[in-house]
Length: 381
Ligand code: SF4
Image (cartoon, rainbow, N blue to C red; front, top):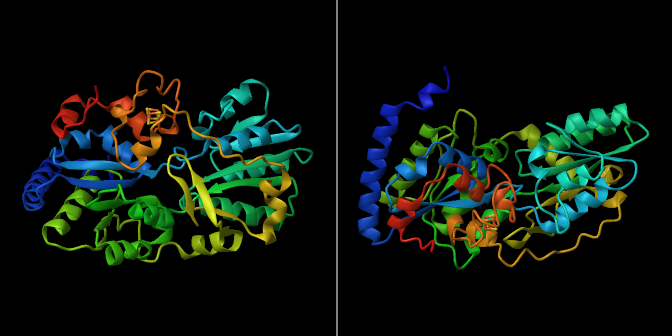
């Protein structure tokens, strides 16, 4: 298939794997320890497991699955707020499908829908706006979540609603920002990283310049990567090559999509509609300064947080849940005590088991990692 096959060519995969193994061996011999590279984006996590990339890499090159799946980092209290809005009489609550099964403290959106709440899955915020146009007597709420990748579509929809004078449409804003989150991770004392695969889709909006602090302040390489097998392997080779050559730079493997400055029109729309929150609560990671956005005062009429009385409670995660440790790369999914028993994709206990981009769900769906975990010395007993 044109534009796909060339990114999955077996001969090129083999050549890159050999080159990665040779460079990894050299760096590991110099450092006397395995290498840890974090893929920030949940889309990369999914691709890495789907194509069996993790299993093909040298055992001393370990991939750490980062926090870049927005569904996975959704706190329980926010899910409870979604359910409360959705169960308000007269409301049509709209959301992307992958948020439907995230467990709240009492129920998920899917369970609320089964109990009679009018909750509808949409593919775009514009679908939600169309519902508002078609149902002027109902309040239509769109659950906005995701990093800078999905933020522009939400912002443009709010601008469209304003231009049309639509009054029965609002946004429950849970959009999050990537740079403060990576900064917080890098300040975490128990994190031990040698480099990053940078998120492809987010970078299309924010550009590669946004990551310069990682090389300048933390002296770590980051390569913005595409999502096909050759993209990921090529990017890993670029990271390990930098390590072998003693460099720490921001490189762009995904040049066919990502530019240095990003999408200026999208950034403008984001800036018009949203402003940074002082802090935002992340599932498994706690509160991170400036890691989320809220709606500006000028758009208060479209802000579900202002329209509905929300409890916004902080709810502790189940004691057995170790999502935070997985997100920080401290343990592998299989090391969580409830992995595959109390927590499965059918009955997820933690959010990492809900979305296909979650590390635990990917491990569960694609992983046969016994031999690899053994090689890494991971104790899953
Ligand atoms: S197995 Fe379930 S509870 Fe454990 S870390 Fe994964 S998602 Fe969280």
